[in-house]
Length: 335
Ligand SMILES: [Zn+2]
Picture: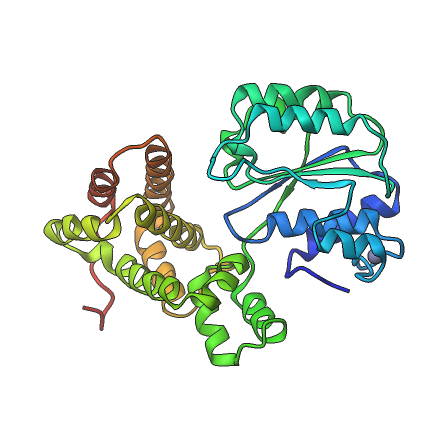
């Protein structure tokens, strides 16, 4: 039974590791927010613990008691390690508890698995508490870390994990999953996939929340025209996009995803995650700007993310960003 959407290449690679008995003691799943990194780690945990896995496809059976208990988050040997309620950072005590549990023998399955989403939410102290388990893992222990910002992780952490880089899904994959698994009609599924930019997790949340879709529709429409905006228009746009810290964060995330496509298009790539009008505009702007200018602004977007994470003023951050954005004439027929 296939449980997750996309990421076929990574799933086949993990299935080969299980089939050949070469399971690593630590994995790091990387890629943008909400593309299914934790879902893939959980799927891998099911594959490892499953009593009747299909190792050619990488699918756990979905029916044995291991598969069912993991799906219901109550398998005794599979632990999802998360920050305490209301906290952003993973506590050092939580990680010490992982180190302690890792030394116990598995109680039900063959493996003792710890899934740590958002590994960047560990302070150097917390990472240190985990290092011994990473360096001298007790037999049968598998640590699965995920991160949307692997460039911020400590090298000591990265070097001890096998990296599993994941890409955003294609709009076609998202559309198909929304139709087949969530029963959406084709038009609505396609519209949602355009807004999702390859992030199935976002699409599933937005299905229930029309206000998420509306905010994104407006932000995306605005972003596509900003290169043609005057200085005054840019200042006004900064105020709207950075209305508050959370809005600013979401706008920046969306903008970065879309601008990755502008940069890819500038380099002549054709495998973009955007679809429809955003894709056409990414291709047009990328071609007009060229790789150097597109990449320079992608770096500015990433720097703005770091600034917001360290509590910079959202509105000022967006003003600086928008004044950095290269100017391009609007596409014929726009504005
Ligand atoms: Zn199973």
